[in-house]
Length: 112
Image (cartoon, rainbow, N blue to C red; front, side, top):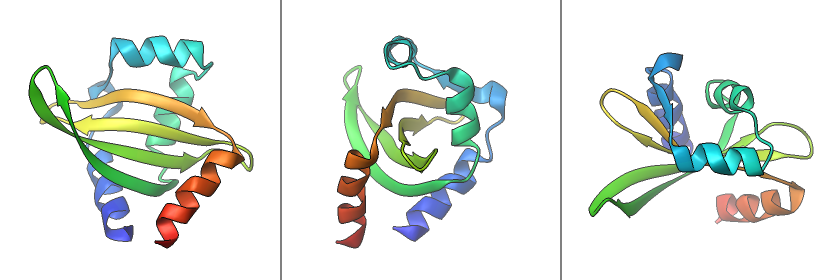
């Protein structure tokens, strides 16, 4: 787990801010959830990642390798960011702001 977190954080740091592409679906969901783009960007590059999970999902008929990242943004909230790495851009697929209750679920997964 810790190796995956370090690997992902290092890979994120290879992208510049201009190379971050937020999908339209994500922008719509961010607006609904009152998550600002500045919060997303600063959190993504902050290094406060404490949980990561690799996923494979179908996107436009092809499998896409995605990563579910969980960042602690305050004592009360965490930010879940779903991303995909591409050669030229880092795509942000979805962003979810969670409360402490959801954090307990991640902690249980970490302990397994």
